[in-house]
Image 1: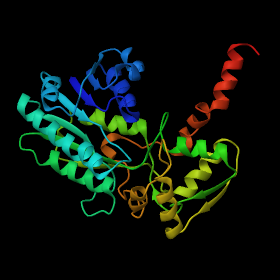
Image 2: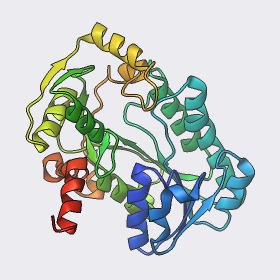
Image 3: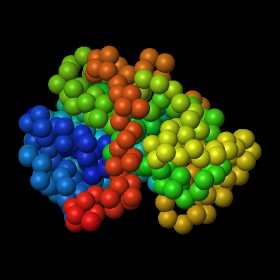
Image 4: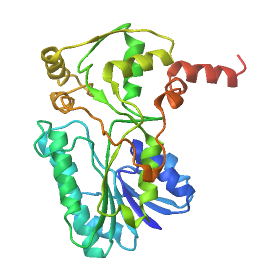
Length: 309
């Protein structure tokens, strides 16, 4: 198939495109800065082009002649205007462009917990965007709602690893919040397998791993990877909210915001687990060693071995 993937330069996108390339698909990846996703350039059948995906005219040009579109674009932090631009306005533009140029297949990345009544802007806008694409006549849509996604290059457990390297004691906002983390390669497989599976059309799939963990338990697992037993201090609701408010003033990458706090008030789990249609989900314990491989110390040791020192 010939595919166009929006958000292909992101965490899930890189893994999905690698899988699709290995299956022989042609993949067009629009992006803002071509040089930032250089690893994709060497994959067979992958074409990267600089485009403004928020411009309807450019979307129509990108979608002309493709068999399916995959929308992975999303943000975790921002203003309500930013969330709506990415999670609602863009999916609406994507669906409209698909209709206009005759693309009939769309895969859409939503989020577990998407709810129009949520206090979290992230979850509200994810629900609104999902509703936009699922209601378009003549468009065969499959939507996916993953829990937090882990794997090589993630910003979830990877962030925990960074925090643990900085402090032996970790005050943890939302430490009792429950998640059912799903492996990025399992998410990629679900997307890839559904492309030409007519039974998935019109469906919304929750994507979760085999086990449920609290945030504090996940932090402890990350510590164990590095042979550490950090003192983890889960904060209560009031302290967690105050911590999230304080972190909003932090420059650069955000650790947490009040919107994250609101999202964590609802368990991020799916009782049905990983859909049997896409195979078995990967156990966290079986692959969590990727954190060690990505650590600065591991890179330093590898460089020393190459230099025979």
